[in-house]
Image (cartoon, rainbow, N blue to C red; front, side):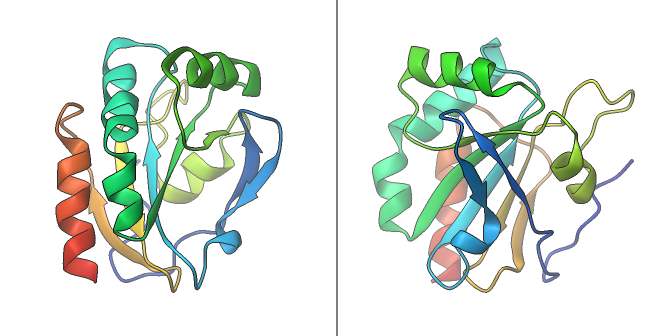
Length: 152
């Protein structure tokens, strides 16, 4: 299955539980912040850890650009909590166990065992501003920063 949304379209709405067990939805950000919604295959694996830590290490500058980072995988809330705590991740991780968000965005890997590594920037109006179908986990935050600067 290919990516289900295109640049300029309304982002599919989402709400899911975070690592701390609270619910987070896209509508909380509309009119306030851009959202960097990044899908990744699995908590605490080498590439996913590198990507999450790259966002962590650049969170201040990304937030200064008016964005919030939100990670999504099919892992459980407990798995997210361990991953977040182990690497001191300062942004929400959504548990998409029922695969609703991954399906809505068209990023579920063939076989449905995990999400593909794809990032979407959703602007303050709730539209898809940019899609990153190929991600370099060690450089992704700088790519995102460049794209956010172009939005403002």
